[in-house]
Length: 628
Image (tube, rainbow, N blue to C red):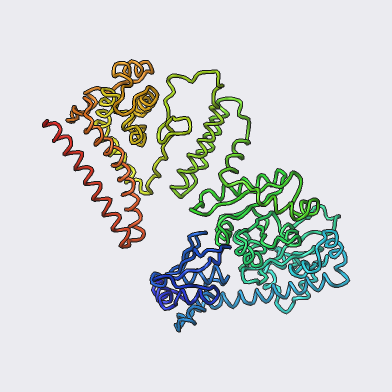
C-alpha cells in the first residue's frame, strides 16, 4: 500500500495525542498542554509535555520527541506499518489500497516467520532430548539457572547435515535456504547450516525469531568458527539488529540505562546476574543504525568492552562511528573491563555488585576519545605531539552537529595544550611576551578566555559576520589608541572590553596587554595609575605594534583616539554587541528556514531591528563627533 504524506498528516490530525499517550501514562492538564512523568526515563517531577494542537510530545529531561506514529513505534515497540494500522483504527480511517507487490512481500515474510518459529521449536526439543546432553553440560558449566535457559530459548542443533532439513521438510528447501537455515552450494545438495552447536534465537523488536546464533560444542572441530550467526535474510539484517533488544528495552527505559556488551553470551550472563537491560551486536562492530536504535531507548547507552586488545579496538571503532551522529543530549559511556575478563568473569569472580560498580565508572565519549588518541603512540617529540593534535582535529571534524563540533574541538585542544605546554616551574618567571587571555577574571585576578560564540550553521552567514568584524577594525584601532592616551579608562571598561573578540581583528595581543597592565598597576576609576608614556614603553618592550591614525582608514574617529571617554564607551558597546547580534541573526535565519513560527519570526525581526540600530549608531557617532 502507498502511504502518502497527506494521508499520514490526516492520520496525525485525527488522533488525540494526549488521549493516545494517556492510555498507558498518567497525564495531567497544564494550560493548553498536558504533562506527565516521562515514560522514556525514570523521573519523579513531570518534564514530559504533550501538545495536541501541534501534535507532538517532548521531554525536557531526556530529549524524547515525536508524534503519534513515533510514540507507537518507540514506546509501544510496534513496526511502522503496524503502528499506522492501529492509529488508523483509532481514527476511523481506512488504510490505502494495498500494493499487490507489498502484499506478496508481507506474505513471504509471514511464511519465513513461521519457518523460523518451527526451527526454534526443533532446536529446543533437541536440547531437552537425548542428543542435547553435551549442550546441557556446557550450560551447567556456565552456571545459567533454568529460568534463564528457558527465557532465552536455548536449543541444540544436532551434528548432522540433514536433521533440520528433514524435520522442516514441509516448508520446502528453497524456503529453508532463504531463511538462512540451509546452505546452498552450486552442484551440491543444500545442507544444515548449524551442526553440533548450542543455539540461541535472535528476535526482532516484536519478539519474533528472525535468526539464530550458535556456539560450537565439539572441540575437535578446530577449523570451525567458535560462534556462527545466521546470514542476512529478508527478516534479518545483522547491521541493524541488536540481540535481546526486545527484552532489554522496557527495563532500560525504566532504569535509564542500556548496557551494550560484545556478544550474546555476555548478555545472558548479565541477565543471570540480575542486569536485564543488556544487548549485543551480532558479529560486527557497533553500526550507526544500532547506535541510533540505542538512542531511541536511552540517551546515553553504556558500551562495555572486554579488557583485551580486541575489546579496545571495538571501543575505538564505536567512538569513531558515534562521533558523526552526536546530537544534543545523546552520547555514549565507555566502560573497559579488567584485562583478560569479560562480564561473566567479573560476575563470577567478584559478584554482580562489582559489575554494577564498573558500569557506573564509564568514561564520557570525549574522555574516551582523548584517552584513545593520547595513548595511541609515544609523545616524546614535537612531531609526536603535532600528530596527536592533528588526529584530534580530524576526529572533531567528523561531528556533524556544529555546536557539539565546536565544543569538542575546544575541549580537546585545551587538553592538548595542557599536555604539550605544561605550566612552568614556580621559580621560573613567565615569558614577558606571553599575552594574557581574556573573558572573565579567574581566582588569581587574571582575565580568562571568553566563551567563543558557537558558529552559525549557514556558512554564508558566517562570512557576513567576518565582514562585520573587518568593518570594525578602524573603530577598534581608535579605541586602543584612546585607551593608551588615557590609561585610567582601561580599568573602567575592562570587564566589557574583555568580551571583544579582538583575536578575530588581529589586535588581540595588544588588547590583552592593555587589560593586564591596566589591571596590575593601580589604576582604579579616576585614581592615578599607569601614565600614558609609561604604558607605551611597556607595550613596545613586549614587541607590540601600536596603532596609528593611518589604522583608522580615513574614518572620523580621531576624537576616540584622543581619549574621549563617551566615544570610547559607545565604541566598545558597538564592537562587543554587533558581532553577537550578527551571530544570533544568522542562527535565527537558519531556524526560520526549518520551522517558521510566530516566536521565531518575532525573534528574527527583533534582531534585524537591533542590527540596524547599531549600524545607525555607528554611522551617526562618526558624523556627530567629527563635527565637534
